[in-house]
Structures are given as structure tokens and as C-alpha cells.
Length: 562
Image 1: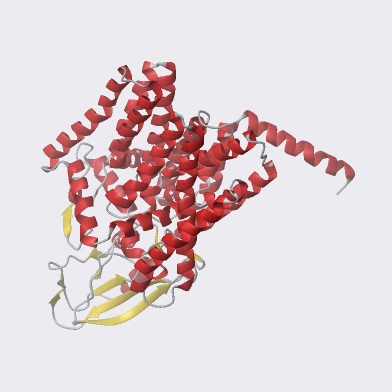
Image 2: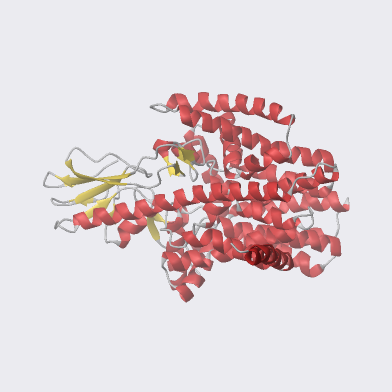
């Protein structure tokens, strides 16, 4: 390298840094595209098909989003009884598909917009809370829960986008006494509620903040009637269309399902703590920048809570779980760190904004632990912007106290946490690829035989099997004939062993991720469903492949019964 070239490099970097400082929002949008771009072709998986099928229905019958049947729980059922989410996300997908088409690339590209909106909204919101709003937004982007959720076409990231911008407009509307911003915030609250029912929690959250900020009721409280009216209208509309109020049905489903699993409150709380640490893993990478002696207390609490979690989970799992035991302890410590960070912020700041962040964080934690039907990463997602802002506020407080942190240290921690989140997201991507590939292999194998191809299991496996012409088994109703085949994936849900009339013909094994898993019960990873898949949002170690067993019918006729 010549001396002239050496001298030009700092100048070039200086220009880039200046551009980023002048155009922070454009830089953040490009960062979102750069992080999520490699996953735009991700196959549909988990509950993606439910949202896509509803979007297909909306294109045909816009006023009847759930007016069709789907085989999701062993037999065909009305869609309104299967889905536990309102339809606004599916309306968005229907609109996007009308322009871009139904391919994986097209729909994931459409979901980039909500992801960008979350990061830009966090930046704007963080300007009211800390001195480094760009860092807070990048920390949000670099959390595993945000990146993994952003590679789905489900409703979670879209709901969070409405949530963050509603909070922003509400804070600014109160400060400026702006009718337009308050009404806009109320409309976004309604949109969040009609995207995912958890959005209704914005009402008590922002009402509590307003009372702390203003110390009295004001005209602002009337705007909260807008999301209430939207939810009431949805209740009436669903009652008229389907004979059931779907919001009430979702509440009942959460209670009944949680009770049927028999999960104790202590277990649920510990699982939520573990998921908090894993989903908001940035806390691990930044903790050395602001914790010293207090880390000993945190570690002691984490070891105690992790030990209790081990006693709950490990004794019911076969094989050696030593690596998983260490992971549970580690992420429990991290989860405790997130809660301690929030409590410390309230203790030191003692202002309405610190209370808003604390209530936002704790409300999400308590909902996941005690109200939602299961602990999962999707319900932890609203924590991501709060954790990013809290970490940045803590760094600001260190600077005010004279304990400066070098920009290089912050950059290293940010890069490490983002790479970690990308590693987890890539694992989820590879698992979805393996599921699609297993469906294709089964279909190609059946193509050599004359009989009908049936399958058990749902999620992405169902989506691709049906796209390839296979039929979902309806237990107690589907009659198999000689020559028919039945495909049963091992890593799936709603499975029953085939009857004695069936004989194993072939087993397909498709490797997925090798180092870390997000959705594999045998690995203990339950990002989407902790109760049956595992106590961790993601698990490191040897990841079992996707296995599909194909059975053939031996007798003249048989009916597969539960």
C-alpha cells in the first residue's frame, strides 16, 4: 500500500461517517435491508401458512377473511376457530401479493417495510430517551428475536411497527398538545390491535404514562376511545360473520390451552426469564461496558433461577443435557440482567419516561409468563426496542458519571451482538429450507407410485406438501386405500402414530442447521413453542436433521383414527 493510499483511507472513512451522521434514517434503513436481505428467499414455516391462506381468501372475499376451512388440528375446522390473530396482517399480505405475487421472495420483500418501520420508529422514539438514538435503533435490529421474527410473514413485526409509532406520536402529541399526533397515535393503536391482539395493551401502557406525565386526566384520554371502538367493531363484525366474538375466543383459548399443558406459574416465569435473555441477547455483549460488582449478585440470582429451571425441564428429557443445562443457566442470567437494567433505570431516573420503559418491558414479560398460551419468541418481540433504549440510556448515565466508554468498544460489542443474531437467524432459515426440501423429496418419491399421498404435521411442511398435491390426514375421516402413502415428519406438531396396517417404506433425512437450532424439540429449542419444543429460544450443539417417515398401506382398506 502506497503512502498516498494510506493517507486516503482515513479521509474516505471520515466521509462515510459524516454521511451516516447527516443521513441516520437512510443509514438505518439500509442496515435493515443488509441484515435481512440474505433471508428474503426463506421458505414459509411455522404459522406462516395461516396468514397466507387468509390473504388468499381476502383477495377473493375481502369482507370475509376467515370464511374457509383448514386442517390444522387433526381435522378440517373453520379458519376463525384455528387462528388466534386478527386479520390486518393478512390484508397487508393480500395487498402486497396483488402487486408482487405469492412467492417467498415477494412476500418477504413486502415484510421488509414493517421491519424498517420498527427500526426507524425506534430511532425517532429513542431521541426522547437517550443521546444516541442511532445506537438504540441498531441494538434493536441486532437482537435475535427481531431478526428471526422479521424473516417470517406473520403478524408480529407489523404489530410492533404500529406499536412503536403509536408510542412515538403519543409522547410527542402530549408534549406538543397536538390533536393530529394524538389522533394519529390512537389510530395506530387501533391498527396494532387489529394486527395482533396484544396491541390492545398499548391502551393501559400509554394511559399510565400520560397520568405520570400530566398528573391528571385531560382531553388526551378521549383519544383512547378510538382503539376501543375499533376492537368493539371487530368483535361485532366477527360475531356477525362467524357467530363468535374472535377477541373473546382468543382470550378463552389462551386460558384453556395453558391449563391443558399443566405448566406451573413458577415454570412459566423461569421459562420467560430464559427467553428474555436469549431473545434480547445484546445484553450479554454490552453488560461488560456498564456492570462490575453488581454482576456478582446478578450471577448468583441467575444460577439459582437456572438451577430451578433445570430441575423442571431436564429430568423430563432423555439423554445427556449437560450443554443445554449450561445454556439455560446462561440465558437465565441474561434475562435477569434485562430486568435489573430496567429496574436500575427507574431507580436512577425516576421520571415518566423511565416508568414507561419499565412498564413496557415488564408488561411484555408478565404477559408471556402468565397470560399467553405459551412462552415463545414472538410474544417477547415487543421487548426489543426497550432493551436497545435501556442499554443506550445506561451508557449515557456512565458518561454523565465520568465513566466514559470508547466508541471502539461500543462498535465491537454491537458488531458481535449483530453477528450472533445473524447466526441464530441463519439457523432458522436453514431449518425452514430443510423442511421444504423434505416435502419435495417425499413428493418425488411418491411420484413413482400410483396411490394417493397423505401426510401428518402442519406448519411449513403442510404448506409445501399441499402445494405439491398431497392431502392432510383428517383423523377419523380419511380412508386410505391400497397403494396410498402416509408421510410423518418427526419435528412437527399434531402427530399420531400410524395404525398397525401401515408399514414403513422409506425414511428421508434432510440436514438443516448444524450449530444452533431455533425450532427442534430434540435439541431443546422452542423459539415458537416453548411448552412442547424446549426451554430455550435457541439451542447450541448437535442439531438433529429433519426426518420424514413414509408408510404404505398393507391391508385392503383402513381408516386412520385417533
